[in-house]
Amino acid sequence: DGGITQSPKYLFRKEGQNVTLSCEQNLNHDAMYWYRQDPGQGLRLIYYSQIVNDFQKGDIAEGYSVSREKKESFPLTVTSAQKNPTAFYLCASSIVRSGTGGQNIQYFGAGTRLSVL
Amino acid sequence: AQSVTQLGSHVSVSEGALVLLRCNYSSSVPPYLFWYVQYPNQGLQLLLKYTTGATLVKGINGFEAEFKKSETSFHLTKPSAHMSDAAEYFCAVGAQKLVFGQGTRLTINP
Image (cartoon, rainbow over all chains, first blue to last red; front, side, top):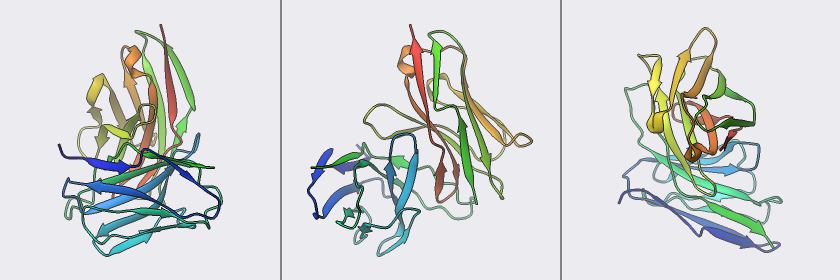
């Protein structure tokens, strides 16, 4: 089955610790995205990547880092600099199309819930 | 810049009643508009999308939405609510990057 796999489903972070959330897709999509979801705030974009070895900051990138070494994988690291990391994290991917006005449907993984110990 | 406002963070309807979830957008370019649904502790699933052409868009699970440029709206409707429709619904605008509304939690009363 094609889709987006996020792991782990639940993650706990200790004070001063960096943690990495995994996101893998087998949809052959070029673009991948990381969102943070907090109650009542919708989804906010952390980072996105439209091609391997390239990525851009979203609206709330501080305290986070990413890499895009493979097309299929876009891991997110929540660093110790992120003082309020408790949230639900969603990864998404989409085809990057040209000549269609850029309309891309984003497909989402099932999410990782991060809590602080 | 693009933005989305969803009117009402929580909507409650009776089973069998009309569902109406409101979304207004702001965009300096012709918008691409989306409605997504999220069930508890899950990711988002696309309900429907508007790109160009017909302004009344039909989606999955009996939902539809109408793009009204003059009102900058893209409200989501379903004629008859079912218990399984209980979820959170997000309106979004954008192309490569999506801007999401704050979400509307839909509760269905038996």
